[in-house]
Image 1 (cartoon, rainbow, N blue to C red):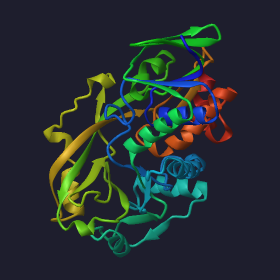
Image 2 (image 1 turned 180 degrees about the horizontal axis):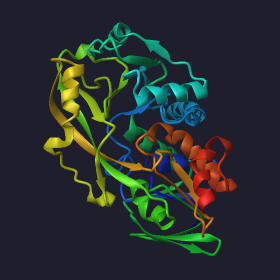
Image 3 (image 1 turned 135 degrees about the vertical axis):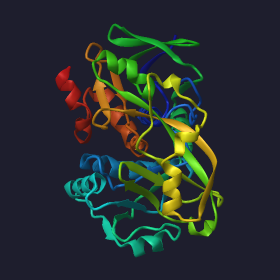
Image 4 (image 1 turned 45 degrees about the vertical axis):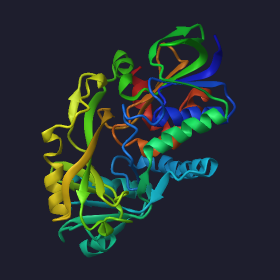
Length: 375
């Protein structure tokens, strides 16, 4: 039974990046996951994920975002793969909306200068999009998208190249404290380590619940609609459009035949992530498709395909990173609340530092302090 410095349970966006940074530093590390890296059963898939500096949740994320951009480029250079495409981002909403107010507040607090543009300028950037003149539009020149399956698999591949062991296809059955270390049992083996990091996404709910930290899991659906005049959807910005009680987002066409989009708001809450329905229901796009017909008149047509994913939400939508109050050798890291993928490269570095130093680095303390106080 081989022993490790750190075991990472859950090799999705956060876990694969953490495994990579630990292995790159020369630690003896192992990753375990029920599925191969880049799978479609959790939250880290779907062809594209937005990366942006225009943050409307909290300006505290900007230093981590800056670091994420650097680390994605470094991973591209190391692997020889293209993982990130910068094409700009349009943020669209009503002047009195909470979306615009939070975007302006967070950008001001972080010292981020966004371009406020006109509807005509937005149409120049995205020729297929019809934006009413009375809406507020911000252009984030640094916005774009990541390839999530490639990002996760590349982090995992490079971690293994740096000496990590990866046990894919092996569900975590149980873990227990073993003196100052941990013992982890999978479907195929038992491992021991000095430290354990739980980055199991929605499947971390029971662990957080034991600590009195409520998480909620939402079933979300991503759609690819067929389009006409695809040249008007190529090389366009990513977009986020808040409309009344809904928030929608979408991407440039990658295949010249379809456009991916989804609703960030709403979604079905699940008692357990295993209860997710992978089939697509008639009402899954009841708000999205009518919106697309308004925003892209006569250019967006029937649904070509769709995929489900999971959001794991905290009450305030911020990440949670905290050591287990009874077992300080166990680090809990989950709850990306639907906006974490872009930050996963930097969060892998943060978690690697945290598990070694026994505390969060200064730029990430706001992820855990509210829970440390209650523990």
